[in-house]
Amino acid sequence: MASGQTIIVGDIQGCYSGLRKLLDKCHFDPSCDRLLSVGDLVARGEDSLATVNYLMSLGDRFDAVLGNHDLHLLSVIEGIRKANPKDNLDNLLGSERLEEIGRWLRTFGLALKADEHHTLVHAGLFPQWSTDQLLAFSNEVSSWLASERYPELLQNMYDNAPEHWEEQLSGFARLRFIINACTRMRFVSTDYRLDLKEKGKPGSASAHLKPWFELNNPGLKSHEKVIFGHWAALNGVTDKKQVIGLDTGYVWGNEMSAYCIETGVMTHVQAK
Image (cartoon, rainbow, N blue to C red; front, side, top):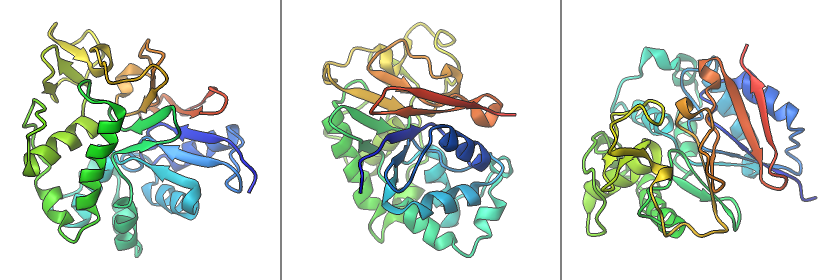
């Protein structure tokens, strides 16, 4: 197979038509190109089922990290939580492929190394972790999601505690911190505590809270880039060469964005 481009797409959130328009604009060819996603494949857009069906049809030409909406969908599938009507998931939840979709989602991790230089995660890289640690912690969660006991993990992931990372954390407290950091994080305090309540733009929070990418991270190597979504209020702006934000709020009427690893080109389509 000829080598092609690697396209990384921001939060899709069930916006099927926007995704296809964006991929057309990128000249995406699944016979030779690879599509990666920073998570939140489903919820709130016009057709989560068509989105998932298309991504599943790409087979090994597609890979993703899990976002908070994707994990919540797994909880809904298992009957642990009820769907939020705003998430517009009725057609997906009524699909005869629902169990298959759940199994497919559980094959994805919380972090993904696209190549030597680029690491994907939905919400961001907790500033006390290196990318190697991030991938190792992602694997801990993936081991649970791949096991028959995965509903226990889903039942125990809904909490904001613990706020502070300690290597000796164990059990569901450890897994919950990893999930929260990877899928829900925006602001981190100057003493490295997760704050999962503030959701606005940088500068809108208390002075002791900073966007995660503004805190010093000695573990992030100079040749590495972190690619993330989740934070639509940023509109992709981080002012950091090593941190690429791809959630530009298409589902809220703004843009869907994609980044090509090989060229460094960013492509956008506007919601109507």
